[in-house]
Image (tube, rainbow, N blue to C red; front, side, top):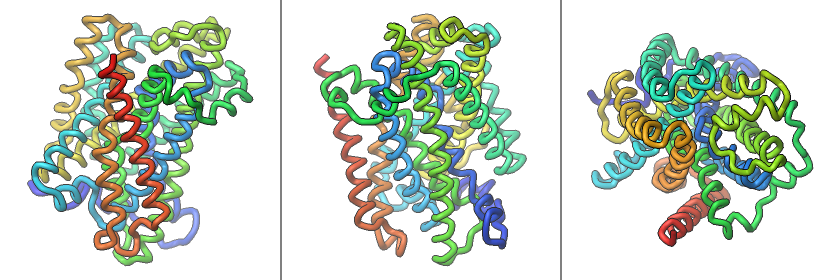
Length: 431
């Protein structure tokens, strides 16, 4: 079946009220929060805990830089979708050769599999911590969320957005409680927002920094955002597109600010509870769960931590499914039923997750979680270069092509990510 539009079941399904003001802005709010979910998934937890326990507040600078990068890139992706009426994957298929399109599709699929792996492990760990369900059984249970997603999609896109916002709110409340108990050194936290030279000289710090970068700026979200903004029924004239871009930018900034708070909170919590007490090797989510209650002196501390983790994993599951649909339909111009697409992606992620859990035990999951985020970082250039090229193309974008300052900024972000990835690969080859 040929898919002519992005997310055809939901394309232009959300009406925009004619009134100017809050109601009109509210109608545009939502896509940014679906994208933000990918920036606070269980992969972020693993990298954030490892970074905070090993280096204290130092890597907060990476969280901040990555969040600012994400805001710029996601706004560009939204503008691309609104200006052209197509998503990034569709445009790649239309404008590049078949071998290039196939290569880009493979890279995007690898990113989605890495994301799905993190979500699967995170949800399974949360089920194990909350209900003592064995990890392997928890991993298999997460396959059933296919049917939850299918049900939500059938009931309308606004419901998916409402569920996502509710879960984000739950995660925010849980971490606010944890931080209130942890009583962090806020002066040190503020100082940690400034970059340090150790990022380039310490291989371990660089590895974790790239893990944070991969967990924060996620390649599949670039494709997804360019499709999500097309769920709004906007006009085809430039004035309507300009207004939609302004509201999409507001939506993105607000949503990713929540993501920054969650990611920073994970690092701050690990720094104030573990690093400050000499426990600098806490990378396992399970270890953090076991230590939070005795170290914070509150019985709810560990439980809320696990509840937030479960909400995070289930939330990210929703958007990974949508991203998989956008990528497959856009690059290959074919459609699969949502449950089939989800089962394929989940199946590819289940195999390494079960193998690691069986071979290394439950305490092998942290390494796999961090590795999955580094894989995401390595995939980033394959989404960012096409995004930069297309949003800078005046023949494609018309009046909405990138101004010079944004071209330079986006080029700098892309170049920085590529250089860091090259440095990581070099360190890896050097042992």
